[in-house]
Image 1: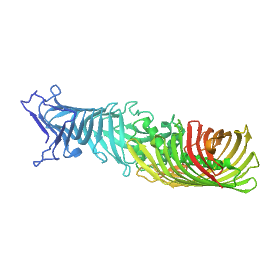
Image 2: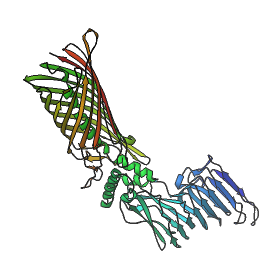
Image 3: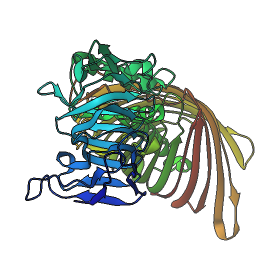
Length: 598
């Protein structure tokens, strides 16, 4: 036993007992019964105040419990009249009706009730949290008296979807249920109403009692009928997503399809039901979207076209030589900022490339290149992290009769990645892992014409068109959450066109050194569409999956600045910086190249 308090005079005793447990304090009773068969509660009040005019007082801001937890007794009253005010935690039964005793209970804290709350007909007022029995176990509590739940009150009910059973609160008087009644379930799905409370008197739910915070997708409809209160889980994922971005709405629609089908997503819907705010729901939808896989395909396509740019520059300053080889080391970084409709991302690549060109006939050249990249990708809001390696090979044919240059290039590549998405559903955080693989190809047709401005400067207008394609092999994520995705295989093809002008010059330094500044500007128009594959939740795949939007800007402005240093005709060194910018998009790259001719 924790505290035994006795105040006994004659039958009209007016010497009430007062017990206060402050915040941080804790009182624990013993086992369910002692060796004599007596209860061993945290608090035992014997006699004291005998009426509401001179009541015993229990004020708890700490913890009242016992060795038996919910199966034990927290407060036991005999003979007297006791008023309990709880702002802390009470675990176990509350029994005030022993030997003619009684009392009332006001709760603004948390009560994890045992088998009974016996007030001998008085009222329990709940503006805190009342849990029936131990969390996760189906139990029942008998409340002897009236039950009035205020607008700030929460009644927590465990439910077992396998058996269809739930906790039950039996009220021997009247029951007025305002505030919230919440199902605590490990799994949740669309279902019929579940009985959670019955009363010998009337059960009523005031108008507006089931008002939930706006923006939450799952609510529990309270249905009062006569002497019974039923609870029915309701879901409106689409309605709660109104005003959010298109990608979030797409995920919400898929969740609605799963719910309407009667599936549970294992623990998924139960976890979504525990979200507290609309902002939590928005964050959840972003983390479930899998948008990163579409963005990754778009990044791969841009890296592949940048590789063709590098090959086409290969040995352009040595057209009078029959053969050349080159090697290059480069680094690139791309950022796409978040919009209302889509998350942003950042992507990096460290590239190692070799290539060469050979003259096969008069004015006709064949060029080739091979590259290896170390790639990394980070999805916006820390939703994804993807790393891997890529290889790219290209072959080009150029015709250069004087100032005119015509060329055609083809390219093939493969990328092998490890992905890890971070799934965030309220307090539940987990990873979804996968092994995406991408194949890519591209075709380019180019034309340029060199115009001499002086003996030191020349300008070359140029244009090219590209047709690029990325193939995403389908895969299924693995991980501890119930929101792993199945990604369909997809081939996405996009076209683009670019026009611009290059300016180059030359200056001879001492001892035969030559420096050549290089500057170019261009505008590229893209018809890239949506790079995202179709996705489904692995725990409940729907026939019609969802597809988030992962797009590139329609127009890019491009700038390139470089310098070439050479001595004689056998070798040169090139340093180059490139940038391209569009709506909420910026990519930058830099590299150094060594060219040898023979």
